[in-house]
Amino acid sequence: MSEYRRVGWIFGLWLLVAVAWGQAEISADQTAHDVVSDATTRVMSVVSGVEEDDSEDLHEYYREIHEILDPVIDYRGFARSVMGPYASRDYYQSLDEAGRAQLREYLNRFADVMRVGLVRTYGKGLLAFGSSRIEVDTPSEEEVGESRISVRQLIYSEEPEPYVILYQMGRNKAGEWKLRNVIIETVNLGEIYKNQFQAAARKHNGDLNEVISQWAGANQDSAI
Image (cartoon, rainbow, N blue to C red; front, side, top):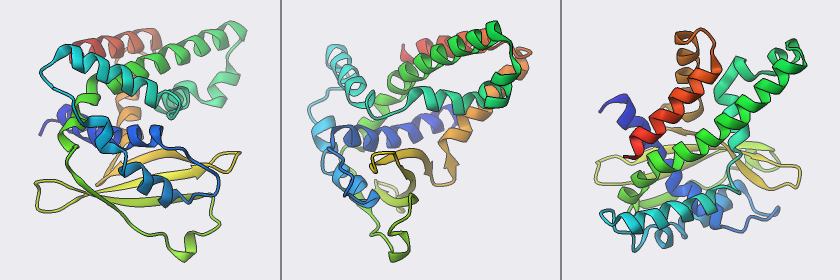
């Protein structure tokens, strides 16, 4: 499997549960495991009735995914993490006012690019997992009272062994559990994109405008 297709497969799994989280009503008294477990019961309602060969149906499908995911995912925070040292606090503070304004513009622009790319490129991948059986491990006593934990999930498909996913969860200021990162098998999603961004930045001699433009172009090509 090529690296590009592998990343697509990974995000297909991630979106499968992220979509369901977007539909769930999360309260502060829920555990992180409750949040993940409750989400799995809503997955089938998201993917059912979608015809992959119907372009109009898929257009509506992507629109609904955007509506569901937009309140759930911090695209700007995700984009900042992917940009790594090019959007770090130290780098920002080293710039003059004009440079800071430009960096903020780059960050906002890249957040929009990431938002479109995550859904357009990988949203279709979750359709393949609509009939999967999903199990979530029960929480351990050591996790009670923690503000950050990892929730282990198993997704069963036609493969002999289930896919193992770790959801890195953290509490927000309201005490609600939010998704911070995802590791599928041994693949850290945030690190994949961070490495890709830094490689592109080196290739273009730190020209962030060109890096983001190239990334946006790749999104359009993958959507065709």
